[in-house]
Length: 234
Ligand code: ADP
Image (cartoon, rainbow, N blue to C red; front, side, top):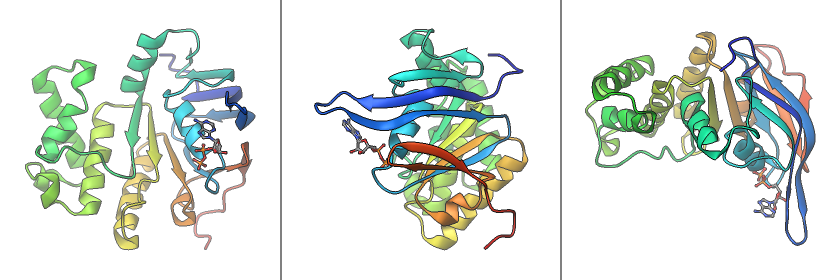
C-alpha cells in the first residue's frame, strides 16, 4: 500500500477477448481515481461495462496497459497477491446481494472477513460496527428472508465495508429494488461518500449515475469522462 498514491490508476488499459474473432471490448484508456471520488460508469448493454468492472475488480487482467491499485502495479505481483489485494482493498456490492440464506445479517457480514484471517472476536466487532453504519443495528440477528430488499442490500454494503476496503465497487446496486427502496440505498452510498469512501458504481440507470460526482461513459468499448451535472440538476 502506498498512502500517497491514487486509489486507482489505469494507463492505456484495454482488453481484447481473443476470440476467434477477437473482440476489442475496451479500447485503451487512462483513468485516475482519487481517495474520496465517487464515479458512475454508464453505457448501454454490450458497451464494455462488465469488462471494466472485471478489470477494476481484479477479476480479469487487462490485455494491454498498466493498472495500479493503491500504488501497486497489479501485473507484477503474482496471482496470490492479486487475490489478497482484491480481498483487502476492494469491497464488492452486486445487484443480487449474494447473502447466505440461513445466516443472520451479522454472520453474513462476518463471513465476508473470513478470507482476511481476521480473528473471530474482531470479526464480530467489525460486523456490528458495519451494520450500525448502514443503519441496521436493530436487524443484526435477522436472516435475509426476514429483511426487505433494501435491508438486504444494506447488509451486502456492510459486508463490503467490514473489510475496510479502499474502494467500494458496485455493480447495478439497485437493479433488484423498486425506486423508493433504491433511493434509500443510494442515500446510503451518498452518506458513505461524504464520510470519505471511494465509490465506483457500474450502472445503466441515469437515476443511479446522477448521484455520482464523476461520470465515465463506455460506448462501443470507448471509455470517456463527461462532465457531471452539478448538484441539484434534474
Ligand atoms: P456490458 O457489461 O456493457 O453489457 P460487456 O463488457 O459484457 O458489456 O461486453 C463488451 C463487449 O465484449 C460486447 O461486445 C460483448 O459481446 C463482448 N464480450 C464480452 N465477454 C466476452 C467474451 N468472453 N468473449 C468474447 N467477447 C466478449
